[in-house]
Image (cartoon, rainbow, N blue to C red; front, side):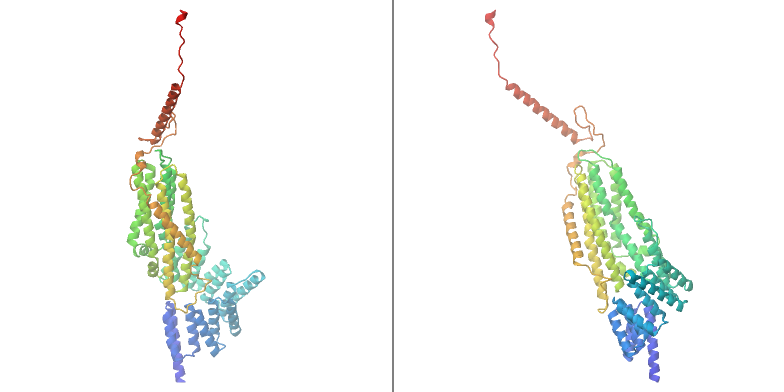
Length: 574
């Protein structure tokens, strides 16, 4: 009897310490602690059930299922084990088996709130279609109502009820349950997190072109949660993801604008010394550049300034990345101003060269950003060796693939635009191709860095961790092939166009100064002068002189070819 009491006390102490460790996200330590306790009593039903619960928290559903079945073989009516068994089956994607386990639990404990809410969640997870959907939806709602009637003073009950309502797409009722739960426990982190998630999901934006409302709102909600709980994993992931996305877009932002600006130089300064209207091109670059800078500033404004500084100044390669990015943006600004005011052909050639260097600087800064991603994510606590992190990384990989298609479309656009400036400077479009090629090459680099990070996190998971294909997919053959082809094409584009950058003097230097003029003609039917050394007028005059000389020669030849006529002798007439 004494030994039994001592064993029970030791088991209770171990489970209490395990609960504390789990609350601190130290599940591995909790599992080790429970394992030691089980060595002293390997058939302790409650210890085994608790051990299965921690395994489920670690996404090790197959192991958890084995432990629950062991418990049920020892004690068939142990409802907590039936509950953990249903959760393990749910984690493995076996919804039908999970529903059967939950129903058996309800038969044993008809007033157990946890079983009612679990069964409602399972019904909402897979509603089906038609009449079946209506029946399962109504049944889920009835079990939620029953749970709230049985336990109306527990904020956790309102949290789980709200989660079921969100699965049923009833956000209004979900918000109502969250409000009721917070009225009972204003600082309940689960309810606060659910409220933030629901608010982000239902926030009203200004339409499809509103690029700031939703990400800014996400930053604000994540910042609120971090103020209450600095170690909140979900909030840290949301904030890190939003800030790093804006950092990456800001770093590579000059590349697309350099492509537009380079084509603008090619279309503005014509090969014959003429200069077309430049301000529309400069306005486009200025507007889109201002939008990119403003968006980065607006989205990051709700975040804690220390967090923003930590990501931008204290991550790997941060100093070099900042200098390269600043250089690229400054050159872009200078090139935009030069498009409006610079008219000297030599100065324009050096501006085009500077744009090529700025594109290279922006490309290098973006590469450093992608290479620093894994280290920054770990330092910020945004990702860890868990299945949720893998799912988030897979989502980011899908986003990169979508961006790849847009960049391919951008390459086609630059190729088409290069024909429009065929009669202008031919050295400027090469810089546009360099910028777009750099954007394309960033895609396989980013996917490689992300995939490497995924493998590291996957390697940190226990071999028994269940990673469902429905939630996480490794890169497919087609996706890798697409990234590889894009990389090869990008390298070919860069290699072809880098040699065309006008570092050395070229034929356009002879133009001297570009001047805008009317394409009028003079008395000699040649265009009016468009510059100090207008080659078009000189060429026209030279060709006309050649034509006149040829006409005179033809007249002379015809004159020489006339037969000689002898005058008749008229002396005898006198």
